[in-house]
Length: 462
Image 1 (cartoon, one colour):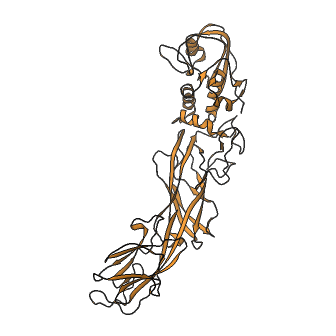
Image 2 (cartoon, helix red, strand yellow):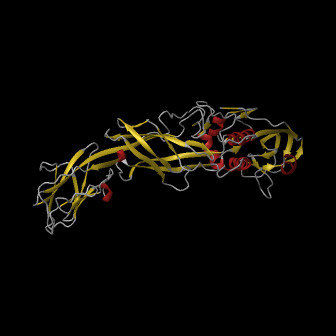
């Protein structure tokens, strides 16, 4: 929020004025720097912010060449003091005043006594504010805006008024990599006589996901931006890698009010915005159709974008998801229970509970990678019965052999991605890109039956 004063200068001269040297000043009017008996009104276009504590906040009257010990007064042109002008400081050389209320129009007289010399200026006090931002302003496409997301299976985000509302909603947003994007923003202004301004925003934090907002001439009608939501282009592109940032802040700015050439003024800031960046639109069984319960869940994006931070290609993303899920999911192995059966995963329940088995972790590799837009991740089951070599199962602290009726893991590009365990106690590693019938089998299988099935996909979750 800010207050601005747009000053115009219908100048009047009363009587014959002379400066300290006795020179008559009856032709000394300069519309860009109004001089009255050596007194200048400065600047010709000034903006007063809501909290006025410095030079940028007030009109200054300079007594250039006026005699020392002079007396200044401010009136409305009829000799009465204007009571709602605030004098911040004064001395023999300058005086600072502020127009205090939005919508006020003041005729400010400057008198230097005892000579009856005065100048007048009209000050219009205005207030403007950013009220809403729509990041996902076209839910049918993500070509140049954010994708459709929701919190989880049961909880959608209401973005009808935008993801960011001043004093209200501040919802996360998600973009795909390397995109030029637009946003739509809404503004209000008082009084309604303000009809236009140039508006833009500056990104205030390094390492954020979105660049500056490019300046646009905004029209106002009846105190509201017209059209109500104005399209702005964001400079640069979205990041070229997967990430999640929680430090995006835009400082909104305005200038050239009503084409007056007025100087730059800070408006309110928006943020802090949470921004996810993924490789491409999520792939099936995720669904980017607006309103689907299988829109990307932020409950999953929080994990996926963190685990796969800085990944730029699919193989790297699958590997990072696998190792991240093993070490950072907060789950522990329990072969006696599961949230995944066949091609269905009870993902909501799994996220809430602490125990998982190999089927759950294979589903995690697939679903948490596909939400990032990676295509081709599946799961593969090996039937037994077989005895393993010592393994360190997820969430456990001891290396032990075990007997399994079967085992299931993530499968991508003909290789094993197993987030359920570490192998090879002498040099522990999470299997990422392992050869199923080579290194992986050598380090996992001890004896029994090793019967790989055909890879398949988790096709349903809730």
